[in-house]
Amino acid sequence: MVFLSNKRIILAPVDISADLLKDRIVKKLEIIFKREVVIEKTRLNVDNFYDPVREQYNSTEILKHFIFNHPAEPEEKVCLIVPYDLFIPILTFVFGEAHLNGNYCIVSLYRLKESFYGKECDEELFKDRLLKEIVHELGHTFGLTHCIDNKCVMFNSYNIDDTDGKSIYFCDSCFEKLDKAL
Image (cartoon, rainbow, N blue to C red; front, side):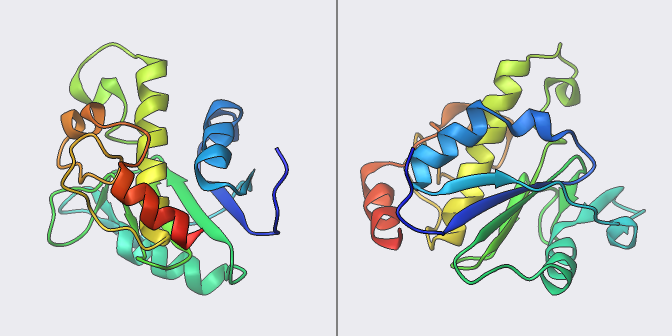
């Protein structure tokens, strides 16, 4: 695939294997966002963002810390991918978080795995869920807000069933907004 500009998306795995993201996920993201997608393994100490009462990590604080210490180029989008259970103070958990119209987002693998729900591992389902959450959070960095169409990737996932029910693609309305942003 030929890209017309140097705009890129950086997938930044933290404490996970970059192999998880290669091939299928990178290729789909390049098609959807019309940008080069690269993987840059990232070191990030998240110990200070752990809440022992909740037994989770504060995604907002992780993003703030990362942004301060790893500034992106103006046209780059950076997606941190972590194995930790994430929260924001007003919600029980989040699959991810993004800066609307910004450069950064974060996605957690923790609740995307079938083992979290006491079920047998399903690698394809896990990768499908991960792709949906990455596309969703990157959508926010391009200015897209939550969509009311439960099949659209921008539909807000309150639980794993919401994630499983939606597509990896944008509805027509969200696609039109994304196309303008690209």
